[in-house]
Image (cartoon, rainbow, N blue to C red; front, side, top):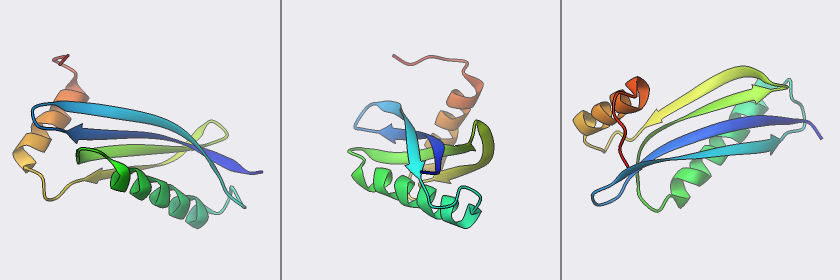
Length: 101
C-alpha cells in the first residue's frame, strides 16, 4: 500500500515545564502522488495529536517525506499562548544555545 512518512514535533508546556515530543509516523494513502490527499491525511493526523495532547501545545512542525524525499513542511503555533514565551522557546529550539533538563 502506498505510504508517506511524517516526522512530527510538538512543543508542550505544563505548569512549570516545557518539553518537545517527537513522533515518526508512517501514513498510508491511496495515491502517493496526490498531494491533496497527502496534505489532508497529514493535517488529520496532526489534529488528532493536538487534540490528544495532555499539556498546552505551544507550537510544532511536521516534515512529510515520500520515498526518503522531503516534499513539504507544516508549521503551527498556538495563537492563544503567550507569544513572547513561545518566541523565546522557538529561539531556544532553533538556536540550541541552552539545554534544559
